Image (cartoon, rainbow, N blue to C red; front, side, top):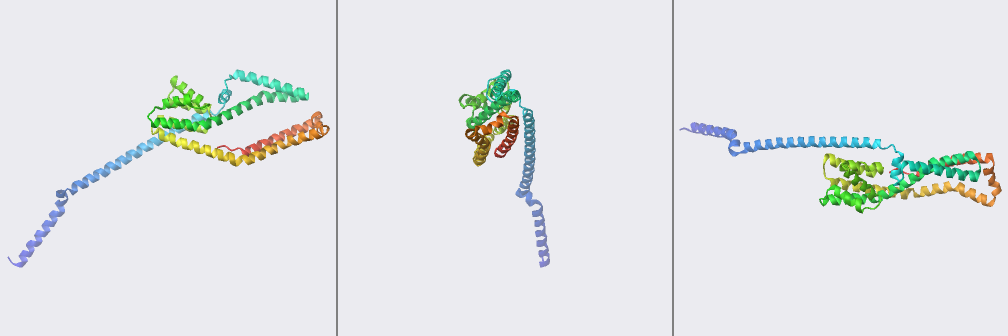
Length: 325
């Protein structure tokens, strides 16, 4: 065999081997199987991500619907009735008893004004203020004081639920602990939640009534968290932990705003008290000089106009120094 023939045989052998290697090496070495498994794994992973994304979108939609339902419910309860105002103040009066007391207060104030002034028109105005203004102002004052006490104790009650849930206790038992051991008015409000459950309401439905009795943003947040967990599931302790941090941050912000606005409030109080202080000093030093404002028709008209503009100024100053948060 000459050299050209040998070279041709070697060249053909190399070509055939290379072709065989290119065609069958992946199958023989298992690389083809690995590539197929890798492709299947990627397809399965992509499908799982699509499923998780669909579940997440579905959950977000459920949460959005739940929030819309709760917001619509909250709007319906915005209209305050007299019974709700009495309940928020923590009083045991019925509506009829409140109306009777308002009438008695109106008669007492009217009689007092008539005894001091002797003018039946002014006495009638005093009776009107005593019957419709004074009782509602008292209820509003008592309700605000009760809401303030509730805000002081509410974050601690939420922490009790968080620790109980982390320890494995059901939320109903955590509510029982708060209803038995918390300070007022948190204890009485959670006792009403327990009583609502005893008549067949679920935890979410019972808690959803709390913002009706305690119309605060904090109680609305609490009701939303509990209802979302009841409807959509999730880690309740984590959600309530976030809520607890929000409540404490809001409390810090509230105290900071009170501290920063205290100077403006003091200035407003001094400005509002100056006319009464000056009038009292003038009455002490020269009673005949200022008595004309009370015994003459012109003086009474001046006093009425001054009282009106004084009320407007006080309302404006109150709006400037009070903040909603």
